[in-house]
Amino acid sequence: MPKITAIQTIRTRAAGRWVIVKVLTDQPGLYGIGSASDHYHSSTVITAIETIAPLLIGREAGHIEDNWQSVYTHGYWRNGSILNTALAGIDMALWDIKGKEAGMPVYQLLGGPTRDAVLAYAHAGGNDLAELEDDVRRYMEEGYQVIRCQLGNYGGGGFLPGGTGQPQNAPPRERLFDDEAYLKNIPEMFAYLRDKVGFDPKLTHDVHEHLRPHNAVALAKLLEPYRLFFLEDLLSPEQIHWYRQVRQQCVTPQAMGELFVNPHEWMPLITERLIDYVRVRVSKGGGITNCRKIATLCEWFGVHTAWQEGGDNDPVNQMAAVHLDLASTSFGVQEENHFRPEEYDLFPGYARLEGGYLYANEQPGLGIDIDEAKARALLNPELAARAYFMAEDRRPDGSIVRP
Image 1 (cartoon, rainbow, N blue to C red):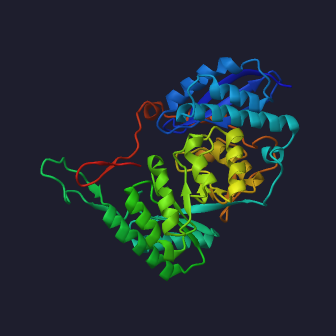
Image 2: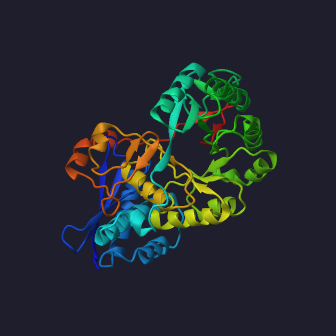
Image 3: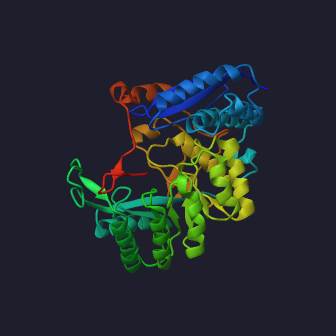
């Protein structure tokens, strides 16, 4: 069996927000790649991987479960987003190696395909209802069956003009978030869309944890007549126990987990059947090894997977999700992600997105590779040196809205 000889990181995308892990072995030409991207802490993740590498050098690359468990507990404290991301990048690379060694795609190693392709949902948006309708229709024409609907940025529909209701000592702010405005405008948005496009398209919406818990419960109830495919991230991870209230009040399907890194976050929601879709990002959940266990847990409790992607993600993580999707009976839907042509060009073998479906390929391993020269050329050192922070929304009194 091949042994691990080195673990490298490749930082790319213009702003350096993508971190790709490359695990080398003692067999000439045999290596694997994985995703360890973190939009806000790229350098920290790279340091974590460099710290972990000596633990694995010389070990069997094919002992994936044992290597995962060793890294998971190597620093005593665990279930943090940085360690999970570093662990996931290595784990994906080891599965890539295992598949190449076996001459099979990873989804074949996971038990073989349970579907022909991976259903994906699109992201439709607009600054007003007419623009949103046009974008929804555009995706419908492209063949998408499931479409997420947003009024502008996250929280759109709940923003008031700057200065509205602010105290006299408040600094000027361009916009302010108001729960009640959101509770009024989002149901009106879906009433408009259902009137215009009917009930054939499956529609979703991402709250992005903007609401206070009691208002989140109210929104789920108000949206019940519009038969959403799911309502995404209705509550913040700190408030997941409110999902019991949601279940008691309505049947609007719930998708949750974009910020989850700890099994104590998703396990009660799955085992108590309080949500319908788990949205953990594969790299934040600890990679293929751990996420296949999440998918199996979902299967036993009638919950589905909807692994998180998002604009900051990379094609390697997307491909890892696609392999899990193909092999998992509990698969529900996959968040799509579009990349620029020069970004696709870095990753030969990337997942093909067409007509609302994602397609893997028949190449062994993950089926995706990275052109390191092009990856280095795409990186802009000036942009990569900057600090990046999550957008910060506030209420009229100045308090922060948790994203």
